Length: 69
Ligand SMILES: [Zn+2]
Image (tube, rainbow, N blue to C red):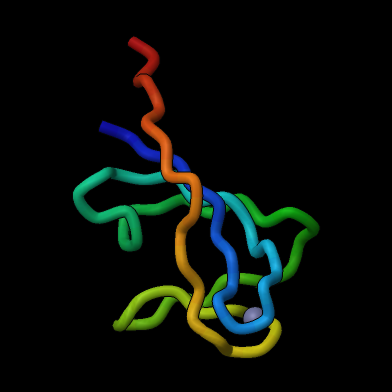
């Protein structure tokens, strides 16, 4: 099962990009689509961080994505 969500910074509230990955581990098998180039999402051992302010990022509006057969 694939899921897709919007990555938003908890600290500054910026929209960082779209993330798509396996539902069980969306953080680690994720493909991240950045909105305007550059590195807006930083992946760390504890999760995702904001590339602007270093705050914690979280995934919002997580939805299932049907696999194309
Ligand atoms: Zn931020």
